[in-house]
Length: 356
Ligand code: NAI
Ligand code: MG
Image (tube, rainbow, N blue to C red):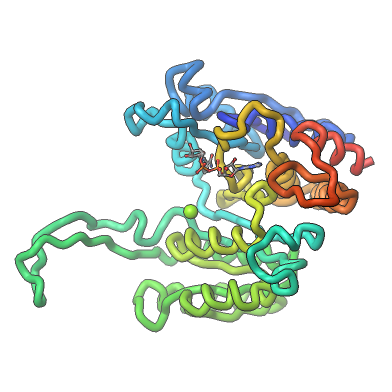
């Protein structure tokens, strides 16, 4: 098993080092190779996604990604900006399924802006389709409005579309993920208004026939937004399109109130994937040794579960994280009075100790 390690910029190298430490402590030999990406790729090789970095990512069984971006690259042309690396990797690796768990550990219930009883123990998984929908549909642009009361004025327009195969493959990801969790999938659409999402619903119902052990229900996106803040614990797996998923996954992330805790996975058709924390490169705290490494450590756990077929090792890491939280250890972003403040590296060491 070969893992490509792409630390990137800002806090990327600090947090990735902790995840590598945890992987090393599992007592199993993984081959790892590290390469520059993002601003680090540009600084060392003149490109945010250098050819050898891309080749490594393609050849590896999984990619562990830190974060990219720094304001010092803001004046570069778009193609050379650090963020292009993640877009390039998604495209080149065919990553179409974005998995974002929103988990609120009971010890951190005070970190959410919602009442503790509403969110404590929250454990949901948002599965967002990444390649289709209105974000990429053509035609698109600005043109002369052809009809209606605004005929003759300029209008902006985009095209919402989903191919059947695109819906089928994300449906399979959601149903299979549900098998490893609470056995329930909620498909979020707007079938009452949009042809694309009536079709989406029809295909979901069809794919569901292959998963009689999983319960499927459907929810309109406006209601889903409401239910997410009203009673988020009612959900298990939520599957939806690119745009609804973009919005709902950010809302779900904030239910937990702590971006430093949230991992993510982006998968291809063969469960090869790129794993990264949901947050960015946090240039405001980079190099200070205070960043929370748990989102990255939990991303490594997702990597073991989804790409490396090591569910037991993933469980071990997740349990070790729960244990350090129960011990009261907190990086500054999740610190509360009465707990013990630790730095990035100390937090990584504590997870390693808890594994033993
Ligand atoms: P950010 O997520 O980097 O930071 C937002 C806030 O959260 C900051 O106050 C930061 O200090 C804090 N924070 C983030 N991660 C943390 C952690 N692990 N521990 C403790 N505190 C943490 O988002 P921001 O500031 O909007 O973007 C900074 C840079 O990151 C930009 O260049 C942006 O483009 C890039 N970015 C990269 C992403 C990626 O690599 N996939 C995703 C999002 C942003
Ligand atoms: Mg977003």
